[in-house]
Length: 560
Image (cartoon, rainbow, N blue to C red; front, side, top):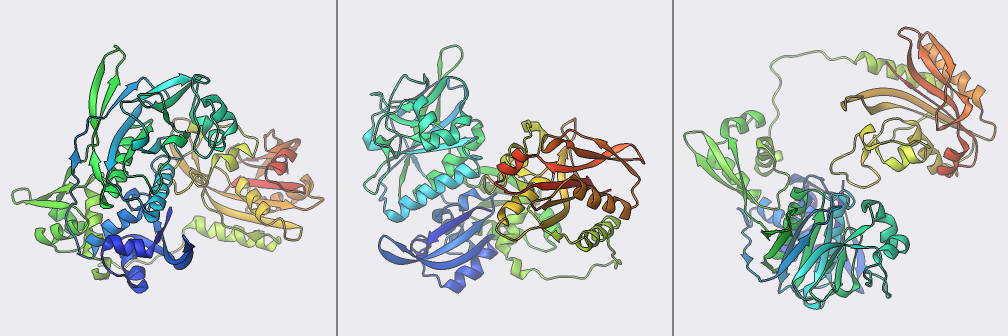
């Protein structure tokens, strides 16, 4: 899960009470935010107490100290009900002229901010955390935050050719063209895969000054400092709901710091050449309905409508009871992007009613449980592998395309695996489709240890079927590395496992890009003539990709 570090002094200022370490450690977990640690750091030449929180990815509004303080004020009853954010009109306009690669955008202005070091650090951290979560590492959403006083409206969001303009990218002291940024700037190299074709998105002002090159880099001209007082915020992306939600989260955080939100008028050029207008931001609350009976049924409680509304108000929402329908109309603030259906509101009632107030009850029907037959089989497999001298490892089921495919010499399309919608980090955004890559990664982590190394793992993977559906498969995989590891060694261990499991099989030659040609075999189960696994000597290029130094042999098969 994403982590957020906040200065305790800053959190206390926003909550408006003094917080003991014990209060932080006891109360925040009850509102769904884990406290990973409280420690001291040196900031601006003085020692500060810092709290590190672990935030659930479905609560991006908690990715800033402002959001955490807002939620905490409601949870402990200091300030309940939905916060109201006023949007003041402005005469600032943005002309959007057909940006095909990232067609959606939203802009807003925040004025009269007192940006100290706390706010500046929080704002930069919030921007990056939103890039990771909602933005999916800028693929879906990219954010630009600019010093409004250094540029002149109206602004233009458009595409240009690679050498059409020059500007100083953030962190550099010389001008570069968009094409040069993608070739030489560290951010350009990292994110150039997000721009296709020979046209590049830019945001410029009336005089042609470049504010940003979404989703790559902002310009040096509009760099935000502690001297900045007025901000222009742009959010661009490939999905309109995510763009608007991201803008609302940032604006509400800045409003909690005392900033005044001002609107921006977008003039969007259509295919017919005509402009149609839209005004941002839209901070109108969303309205949902939740049944009183369903709340009590799901939570096992007997709450009256008033108690449910009080719990929702502690979650910074508003509720109005409808006697005829025995339901509550709930108004949800614009920064709560996690509320999608009735069950989300029920969870909100549970959190703010207090998990510590729930009491357990014995089930009315007593049943006797036992281990699933598959689990018994897996325990037997583990005992076989340990008996052969292997050490068991347990890896995460989440990884990334780099480890699972690219380092393994495999070309794969986006529809060949399951990707997490809101990953905690870029390293953990794909559900693994096989286990061998993660075992090779484990060997890399432990390559300073003595040889030989023999490790195995039994666990689930998720594969995508031809029609786009997916299913879980349980697999056994093991690897061996030492200077003389070879095909015969992995074959002997693999066949031993197959015999112990009473599997009738045959071996056939197999070409697999992760293995050396001619030194890989597939396992065919004779019960249904289906391929259930493969083994062999890992390809030298794969070994180099994982920065290993000795031969590696590997085995992987489905457990049925």
